[in-house]
Length: 196
Image 1 (cartoon, rainbow, N blue to C red):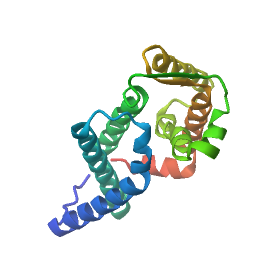
Image 2: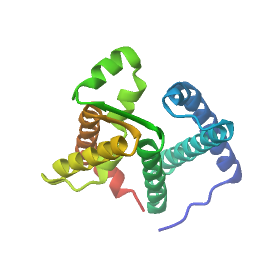
Image 3: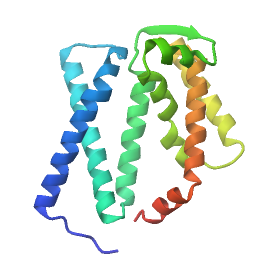
Image 4: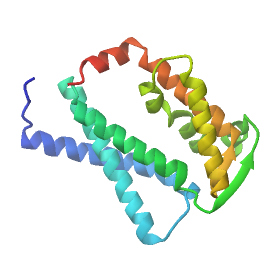
């Protein structure tokens, strides 16, 4: 495998474009959602905002580099999945410390979507797609994933880390199923073939 050299101006331009796009995405999509996250003071909030913008910048940079080169390194894929899993751990266990609730309605997301805003149900519907894409494609995978989601929801309730919400179970399970399905598409197979 030959390593393509990056011209310094190309690197700077791609980084600036990635930063501007990530800042726009942060202001447009993330800031409205921040009201759902417990606030732990100004320093924590500013640090969290900075980390989110940096992660988005890196993600967009990887995407633009992939589009230009038509290949992606396995190290980049591993780093993106590491960031994804760390973000998932934060969202599942640390964003609602001290809150506790119970919702036994499998379709609670419908009323959330209509009355409370669309961001949270949409995020619940997409946040497990990357996980579903890397899970084994067997019949036993989805039931095991559902048990895992139930354990997470149970931990959120027992340890006051959020709401035990069966609507989240429905959307998260759908998200995993979508990820598993997308991983079987010809496009996903092509992407796997260009990981170096």
